[in-house]
Image (cartoon, rainbow, N blue to C red; front, side):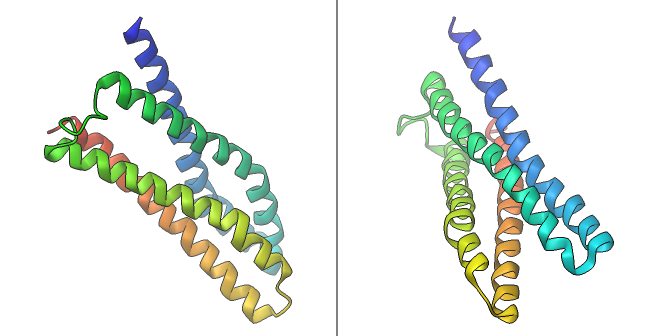
Length: 157
């Protein structure tokens, strides 16, 4: 029964990772460049709509990553202080820290930065806030790739 539970949590965890990180990659590497090429100055409207549709999926992914991550750590006994020693433990702690940073960035963008961008009247100020928002998405994408690298390395130690 423990194995079935563990496999189920791993499946949900990996699916949530794929949705969140894959969605970020799609937006950054496909949607934004395509929208800019076709729509030019109106690209922001399309990307805003894409973001509105993606955000609930990202939120759900974050919830499932937190839930399944804690559950997997409990099932595998990696929550204890002893299990967090050594290279594998360091990698696990870094993964958790980066996940929290990524989730914080995601919610900061949605709850603080997006409303501020929407209220800003000055084109220059709006452009700076949009650039900050885009840079934060790139930060999350890079952080997500590091988390994946750490995940692969956990088993190596």
